Length: 608
Image (cartoon, rainbow, N blue to C red; front, side):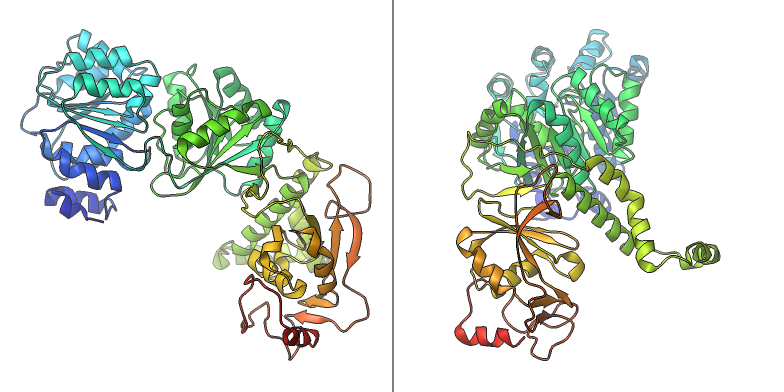
């Protein structure tokens, strides 16, 4: 990969972007900047949102603009006010240490008199939404006769929003001798027509295949009844750690309804749609960018131009009618090289759209499972535990307050304090999710034999074998790979026989192919982990009531613990121990390496 120095940019520009924290160009920047610096070519750049397109055209533009000439030399068209403002901010940051440029943003919903005043001062670069720019042209405030460069950013979005006539009117009023730089995530017929009508032998740069989505986005979907979509949304939000996301709805009414329901249920959410005033839009977007707002519920049009790099999730309450809409929705996450999740909440009748998008994006969607009530509660209590364990304690400031705290809690044991602490947060979720039903809708229209499915944010395999309860988990120092290794070793089976693993706090679940279940059950007889006798149980289907239960599952058969045999141990003592949890060095093969043991290995295991 080249450096910015090798792209032909001046030393001043390179130093300016270095001070902003950028060291190496993105692929679209590396390809586009040398071409555009020539100043005599048209260009079509196809790249997903969040790949650095603004710098790809902005840096060459700064180099090419004559700062001594106060006429308007460059025009940048963008679909929304938010994107226009973002582009202007970036250009000002790129240029402030290089050239004295006057960059003016014009858009609807704001004072036109203020914008007129700024343009008349001499705007060398105008960043505009199409509608407001035409207003200024008709008022003879903006003259297109001196334009040398026209940039169409997110051209497909502008056309989807109905700006085709406005774009035609603007481009037809510019000089014939100009350069047109068109950037788009997709290349529908309408965008291709613009390149034919207003560009001369444009160079085309494509990052990835056309219409291919961002590789850092994990595309998932869940299948529910239409009436359960909102309940499924809440469970996914509750289960996702530190979620910061955009929720898309098809209509303004749905957007407002979902946002109001989330706020009523205690979530930090708000709506963004076309019926809001500009002041209301600004307030919502400011809160979202500052992360004082966790969930933004938006329509496709209202969310255009949202440029927030840390969005973790995009959630689709309804699948869009147009493929381009899905591309732009999901492109709100996984920006600036980060990873993100695009989750579609679909009913059975919407499954066909999933297949269509898969074919277009050439990306397979993963069928996720909606967490059960027990799983949400378990996740939340462990999040609270980790937060407590990792909290920074200000010893100097808190010391003076602690004597009264100690006195108040002196009659409580350590176990009582832990229970009460956990219950502060846990009781609310427990009360809400007690006896919560399974929302997952069976999907018979697609084949998932052997296909990866995930529950919440996990990625383990989920199949049709036996589901096993085991009474050890993270509290015993285990991670998923550790438990996988234990099952392989004591069950004497290959890891290919093991399905989905749900690692929890004090217990876990895992799936086995039916032909090895009995073997694994017997293999764990007499085993101890950190002094705890390991117990395995066959788990029945999750139910809303009835039956003797363990962790929300009906007990059918139990193995291990209290059989009178000498226990085999992991951790906590034993001279014959080959591996240990809690600081011991692992001296044999790593967990999860698969395969059974030889006869000699089995004899050794019996002595542990």
